[in-house]
Length: 181
Image (cartoon, rainbow, N blue to C red; front, top):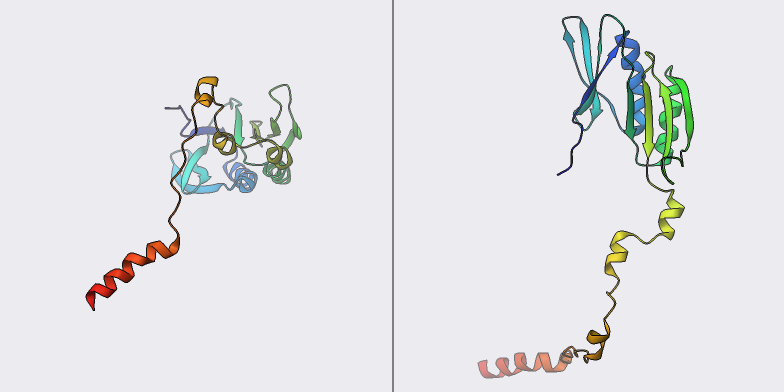
């Protein structure tokens, strides 16, 4: 079993501004406002996809504690689109899309500060399509026959039974048809 974060909440100073920002920034990642309802001190919105919110935003009185939130993207194009959408929605550049090889070879991410200064990241760990085509997939690697040991290769290979020709398979049917006559 793996441990996953089910959801988290971010405190915001301007609810409508934050909702607009997150709806735009999450759209390239197939996300948006899933639900919204009033609270004692304002409103709260659940953002996510497929009807499941994973990020909640709501107004808090007092100072806001900044967080770093990394959102998984499926492709580098999605990371680029996230960055562009977040910037257009009022985000502040905190790291343009690109490789971060100090994390690992295929860590491709973009960082944007939201209207309250939270560091929001979109990241993919997947190599570009060209590199994936050159590398055999796990399924392809699993299909490769295992190497035989010297002991196993000394045994003669089993011959598979040859299929009977079509004429022989049809013969019993003809014989049964003759008996019926």
